Structure formats: structure tokens, C-alpha cells
Image (cartoon, rainbow, N blue to C red; front, top):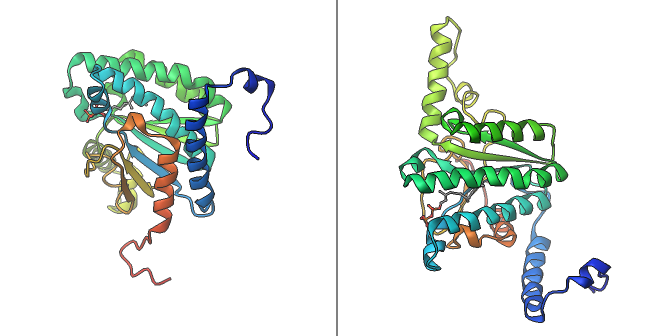
Length: 272
Ligand code: FPP
């Protein structure tokens, strides 16, 4: 029977009966989902458009930033779920090139949250061998953020379990423009450039990352919002009505389970 072997620490911290009942329900549904997942056919790379922080806050008559803070806790759930499954790559859309259009106070608070996240999570990243990566026009981020990022990248660069990529000041079209600029620069310098999918892929921020197999979007919107447009060409899309701050490990397990039920044909007939 599960729960029969409590450590003394767990016994001291026993929650109230109602929350035990709630946890048991969550636990069983989470474990049931986990047991149904085929660990030999996991997506190699999951990308997530984390949407709905503002609506989550609005529903509770809280300021938008409270939604982002709750969203930060959901990031932990997503990372944890990937880590438990053994998924090697997770990419999160944390700040888009369009997000600068938001009120300055919200932008400032998002940057502060990001710094807070890096500080708070560093210990856990080290413990669980999580390597941090970033994609986007990083040089346009505030200096303090760039410094913290640089430190976090440095401190986690040898970690080998899960690669967590944060898309910051990211836009897929901007990424393509930057890639074409690199191609043109090489040509102007007299280099030989073969014009191919490979030569473009190699100049994207995601160079070295496998394309995402599964793209999750929360809060029900059916849009790609300028996220990984090139890389997601064959990604399976999974959209949930759940608002990002409510996203839990079991939501990610459900997405993986649904992904495994789909047949990926890459334009062929799929008659293996
Ligand atoms: C979209 O919700 C979310 C964002 C623009 C920011 C995502 C940020 C976080 C999840 C918190 C911090 C992240 C890290 C990695 C530390 P929205 O504000 O567009 O929601 P709405 O559509 O309901 O208004």
C-alpha cells in the first residue's frame, strides 16, 4: 500500500485530512496517467506557450503580476514533469519580442520575476542536473538580466539531464531574419553558402536542439504566436483550456499520453 512507510519528517508535517483527500485524488490520477505512458516513445523535445497568467489573475481580482508569479510556480511543475519522465528538452516561451508593448511596470516585473526564478531555482537545477539555455535577442534584455542569465548558463553548462531553454525576447520571424543576416554576412565575406534547410537550421538560435515533437499551449487559444515557426513544422499541437498558473505535472503527462495516441506521418502515408 502506498503511504505505509512515512519518514519521521513526513509524519511531523502531516497535512489536514481534507488536503490529504485532495492529494490522494491528485496522486492517483497523476500516477494513473504516468503508468499509461510508454517510456520508449517519449517526445524528445516539448515546447510550451505559457498563456493565461493575466486571465488567471483577473478571475481572482488580483493584479496581473500575481498571475505571472503563479505562472512561475507552474514552470516548476512543467520542468519537474519532464525531469520525472526523462524528456531531454523543454523549451518555454517566457517573453516574446511583442511583449515589450505591455505597460512598463508589467515588463519590469516580468524581468524581476525572471531574475528571481534564476536565483531560486539554481540549487534545484544543480541538484537535478538541469542545463539552462536561452534563445532570443538576448543582447536587448536589461543588463542585470543578462548578467544573471550569463551566470546561470555558466553554472549549469555541464549538467546533462534536462535541457531547459527559455525563449526570451524571442520571435520566430526575428530569428529567421537573424539567420538570413548571418547567411548574407558569410556570403559577403566570400564564404560559400549552400542555400538549404540545413544551412538555415544551423543559423537559428535553436542550433543543436532537436525540433519540438510536441507543442503545448495553455488557455485555449489556437495560435502559434510567432513561436518556433520553423522548428515546429511537424510538431504535434496540444491545446488545453487550463490557464498556465493552474498547469500541473499531470497536464503534461496527459499531453504526452495524447501525443502517443497520434500517428505522425510527416506528409507520408504512415503505412509503416
Ligand atoms: C502569458 O500570459 C505569459 C507571459 C507573457 C509571460 C510568461 C511568464 C511566466 C510564466 C512567469 C515567469 C517565467 C519564468 C520562466 C520565470 P498573459 O499575460 O498573456 O495572459 P493573458 O493572455 O491571460 O493576459
